[in-house]
Image 1 (cartoon, rainbow, N blue to C red):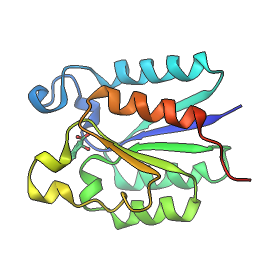
Image 2 (image 1 turned 90 degrees about the horizontal axis):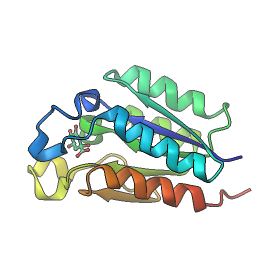
Image 3 (image 1 turned 30 degrees about the vertical axis):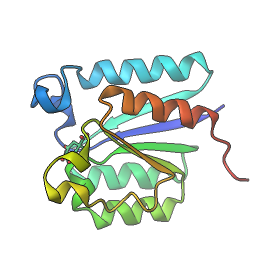
Length: 147
Ligand code: DQA
């Protein structure tokens, strides 16, 4: 059975009320519910984890190395533009991943165009709101890990 891990970075716990013009009005638990239901329909397991702490996200990525995680979907949020440590953790565990963003980071401030993750990711989905995550889950469900 496929095991998918969805990681949400800092401030994404505030979705729904945080800058709704940029991030929409859907809450994080609504997003997680939709993703779990999508995965469930395909008989896959999907686990969600949000943290405002870089070290907790690092620990969760490292845990994925041994807990049967086959695919990671990550919205590193502000850590996208700052965290070499989180980049290195994803490189270390060597689990295929997609980088997602609710907003179109290329249409915003210049510093948001830089990502420490994009070149390691299978792909990047940015700017489609909650659908960014849903499309990533659909891809993950069909993705065949290399033996
Ligand atoms: C974000 C974009 C980041 O630049 C920002 O720091 C976030 C959210 C997005 O989903 O659009 O917190 O990752």
